[in-house]
Image (cartoon, rainbow, N blue to C red; front, side):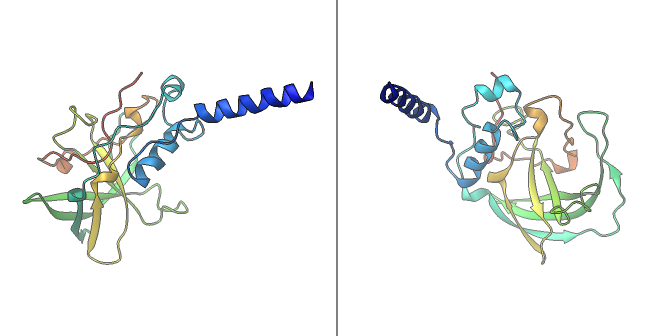
Length: 200
């Protein structure tokens, strides 16, 4: 009898292992994101969407969209309240400007610092880079995308658009997301990073 029980348990374990699908993604970053979204303790997805979740859809990694930008600090900028998708208005300051060339054109983006995060451990040097581009509302989320950054030591910064991600409110309206300032609109297609999420 014990042998039968053990055999049944073994079959169940093997079946479960086979059912557990591998984490999808072409790059380490994509795999990390998909793992994060699959985990019920960290996922911003609604339960029904998480249960049906197979993986985020990304543009194919393209090194063209890894650019070295000239970083110009903008000291003495006033603190302002950034609009969000809710009534929440977190305080930000324009920390600097990033100027870079992409596919033969020159662009400038403002980069911001969240004043509420400065005193939190691990976020002392965190910078926020939101942007809009001409894929918004088509292949990518209509409200634009974000990139996380850290204060550089010198006057250059690498921007990897392949790591551009959606605001959480693209997945669940319960979240409050900063609205990308119009000054950070790039008049070009950024075919890199995460694509729009199709809800189940």
